[in-house]
Amino acid sequence: CIRYGWHPPNFPSSCVCGHAFSIDHALSCTYGGFHTLRHNNARDLLVSLLKDVCPNVCRKPSLQPLSGERFLHRSACTEDNARLDIAVEEFWGYQGRKSFFDVRVFNPLTPTYRGQSLASCYKRNEEDKKRKYDERVHEVEHGCFAPLVFSAAGGFAPISGAFIKRLALLHAERLGKQYNTLLYFMRCEISFSLLQSTIRCLRGSRSSYSRPLSLPCLEDMSRIISDARLSIYVNYYIPAIINIIVIILALLLLYYAFSSSVALLLG
Image (cartoon, rainbow, N blue to C red):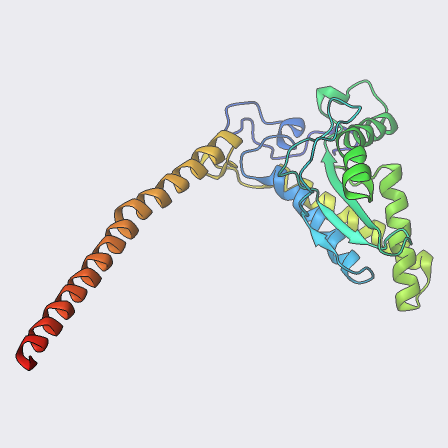
């Protein structure tokens, strides 16, 4: 249905967000969190496959903060708290060198990609990721970067295809099994995982209460938490410290008075 643009049966007419419910809208709407789960499921599957054959596999690694570096592309990521999806050592065969990957699952049916071939859509998303992270990873992290772009319909971009081939080769060398069989298995597993997430987007129950928090909401929540911590510190810890100091001073005065009275009695 997705690849050929067919309308699935028993499809709801409207979404909880108020828009008309279509395949395009179902794959892009943030209500229900399925849009985020689709990305996370693909990332977690690749991480689990990498952990079997590569050392020091890290999910959502933090990038080092910048110290005055400037990049050629305006869209390059310059945030100090920037993260990528996957970091792994010795994936491409370079001993001790880290490889960074960032996953993107896009919907080729959106108006942004209409009139473009699927190959150009893949290339567009790969170039977008490269402009954002490639130079920073190369100059600051001294590693290599590769975007892992997948289609919601189960396909993958050329770089992702090379990644899967390399991953299958590492598994074949480690497990002693045929490369072609492992490559076929991994392609099917990744495609079925993407299709499963897509079906969840189409058929999953959405609610206005399960909408993912936006960035302003997260900033407000962090501000509330910091204010609450400050309030606890001011209203609880500071009075407690003052009370302890008062008690210690009172004990010292009692000790001084007791020692003075004992000295007078003995004298």
